[in-house]
Length: 638
Image 1 (cartoon, rainbow, N blue to C red):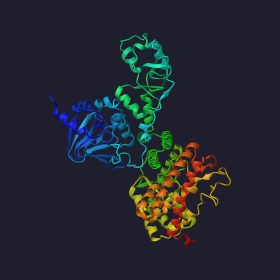
Image 2: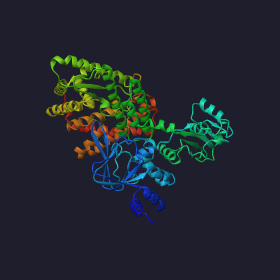
Image 3: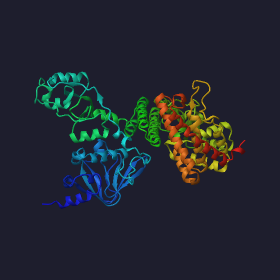
Image 4: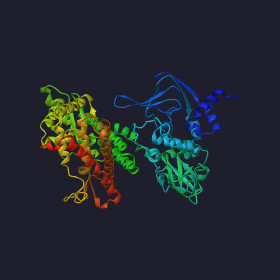
């Protein structure tokens, strides 16, 4: 007797990936096991951080919104409609839901059992490829240019599906695994495992893997009395082993473990069980790889008990940066990830410091990041630049209130220094009484800098006008930002002074088109990529953004916004954004290689291609500086 419901489900599934990649017979078996769920409008399907359900979902009718909680605010990330899949990744990756799902309208969903579906994943390579690509791009259909998915921080710049994220990295396995022969006794093999602090031993014959004995085998087969401890390991080993080649990805490893229900994979020369064993990939190895997942790092930061723990986590973030740079992940994406990690570290340092003081802040306040962290461009462990603003208070309470915030700032900056962000040489930190002020004082400071632009005040403007909210009361931050725009609007000539200061920076090339390098000191004959190339682009973006009252700090985002507000100059701004991406990636790569700030580059060791790549970034600098001269009448500035 025909199952008409299953046939209707099959008729729907066959038009959507990855089900359209399956033969009809297999699809029919899946259709018979699918559950049908009805949800009313706004009804929660699953919430962020919930444990994964036993099935994932496909929208049959209606629509589902996916959301994520940010700073006390719910953000709608995407809308799934007919034929869209969601809720699959947590089931495969063994993690809680990274976002929630709710019915956007009355909806009917198909619930597809993960256990049923997992059994066919590796039997159909195209389905496996679809899932791996989906994990890499976080889109629902990675094989079309018209997908609606924007499930990873809305970063559209990511294009390299094959190696962009952790799941598509080559898994790091344990080389030279401990082995034994089939006739070795369980007792002797267990002693070897104990001595080497491992939970498995590979059984080999002429170095060909034929089985594996794990702690579980010893518990379930020896501990229960089914076998004796003097029996050979071949009596209790799991056989045959599951093998893969050396270039297995994290996603492939997860899928293989899911399908075969094993905790270990054997790595052989050609990926079959007929060639020499070269390594073992255990569940623990995959957990370590996932440990450098930015989401897991931020979770660890939020529960860190001290600055030393934060330092350890930030070291892992540096490894993450290194991996992204090596994989040529778009730099805009890298800055977003690492900046978020730096922000969470600062927040945790503030929480720990307040707990250390033992008294909550007396009034509302805001912690501000300045400089590269304020622009969300601090990829390397450079020095810290920060400030603090607190609510306006009565004169009699001012001294006591400021004393509290200076103590708080001192503890926070000390913790950040332990983490690896060195103290600012110029003491531009919230622990300095000059930069720990009330809203009224900050406004007065900005007004004075803009009204009386001396060289020192212009320098402060360059540093402090990139202030960014990190933690505290957003209203205080908004008041400060509005005051800057208001004062500049009243005295636009100030932007001319800023432009002149920017143009006084040393040029990157000399008269004969050679790199201008340092003439003396410890960096003699090195090129200052920060001052001569990156800073001019940062300064120009800031000045044009202040002119248009664009309230974003990130240099790339500023240029992209400027392309919108000045379409007639979009070519210049686009070239500046591209040049900045190249320079920032180049500096970061240099810094990671040399374990320093990446500020100075030894031109002599660069390849000809790298030299040309650097020089190609200098024309946009020249063009945007010419625009500054014309726009703000630099010739009229004394």
